Image 1 (tube, rainbow over the protein chains, first blue to last red):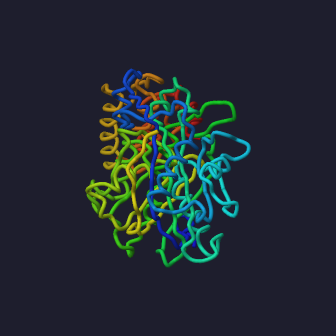
Image 2 (cartoon, rainbow over the protein chains, first blue to last red; image 1 turned 45 degrees about the horizontal axis):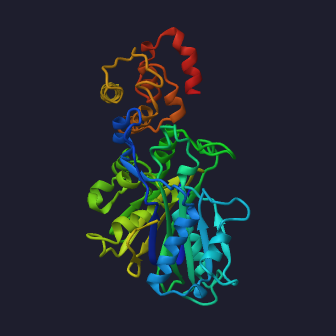
Image 3 (tube, each protein chain N blue to C red; image 1 turned 90 degrees about the horizontal axis):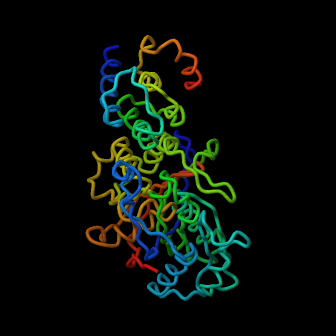
Length: 332
Length: 94
């Protein structure tokens, strides 16, 4: 179904069984950057995690190993692996294959790698749930799919570029998906507009470049319609709204523009950008690990999530999280 | 008309806070200085809040005076723009 805002509205059956996020141990602060105080006032980023030797695959594999152990899911039961990243450790072959090997996944478990940006977690949930459904790869309801989402953006940013280096943090995550409408119904809202794809981009061999004002303009034009389509009036009000952690000014502005502050209290719109920065496609699962699985939100039963970024691409979802187990954040 | 004047006053106040200095339509913006990417991002947000217009970030960053920003935001005065600026402003506004 196409919404009046031009978004694709799709449904899938499934639920999140568990989430684990992993970050590098190395903490860097933004002290010393020119105009650090003014920049921090806008971005909200005070510190972030930066990989030293760890690859995105290292972070995601560590998260996946912990997740499988926590859930008691043998690797042999995984029906498909979806790996979402813009910063793979290896270009050819896809890094999903090395993760497949490291986790000891069976040969009948296909591995898929997708270069999705900050909307990547929600897009990844959509794909993983489709694969976990009997109409996808799963042979029966309750198929298990591993969704690994992460980025080590520090490997592609210019360390001297004040627009990107002090903003992006590194993180990886693993999400366990159970497929089928028996597990729950998930509403997805998806959209893409590739016309301005160079505004936030990285050419081969070059650093990531970001035209901040254009990113913000895109966000203001697009995300209100995404929120409207994801949270129609007839839908039960979710307990939590999880936004991609782009920057603090943008998040506050969006909350006001979308009228969310009149419908939800501030505690329902958590943020961890001060501590972790913008972790690209991993920001939502990292937010789940740092804020949803702990007091006071560990009672949460239904969440809405919103991703948006390079491409341009955007995606929203509402889903039941009653079965979701959130493990403690791990550091490697 | 009254609404435009009110929005213009509110936007001038917001722009003064962003560039951390008093501004008038004639104020020349210091590209890379107080009119850096952080300032332009915040101006995109303030224009949206005050004027209800989402301006193009590239066009806004190309503005060289406050008057050009006001015109882009839809609350400017044609007469506040010098004749020399008109040609370039036409380019900026596309």
